[in-house]
Image (cartoon, rainbow, N blue to C red; front, side):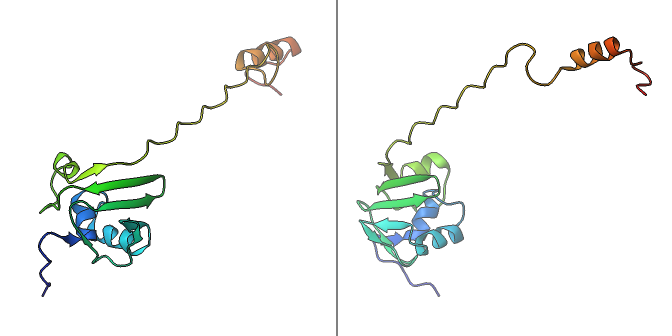
Length: 133
């Protein structure tokens, strides 16, 4: 039988799932235990850590850093707009995307011949297009 949670707090894995930070509660538990989540600057070592309104979560994900201030606890995993009301996103903006180098332009006649060029070469050499041998 599950133990009742203290009033005014909720398990961190449940909150991460309610807030739609992870796709499943199992993934939320793994994220919390993996050491990638900090609760008020302290590393979370168990998925049962309690979260309450006013706490700040720092979550390091593969391609981004999330800093979330807990506003509400939530009672269910609802639609995305409802989930976004559970926290305030204080994450830094993502770094600007690196500009790709422009594709080098070749001078006319440089590089491999086009299909049109190959046909002209074949005509000049006297090859028959049907039987090249």
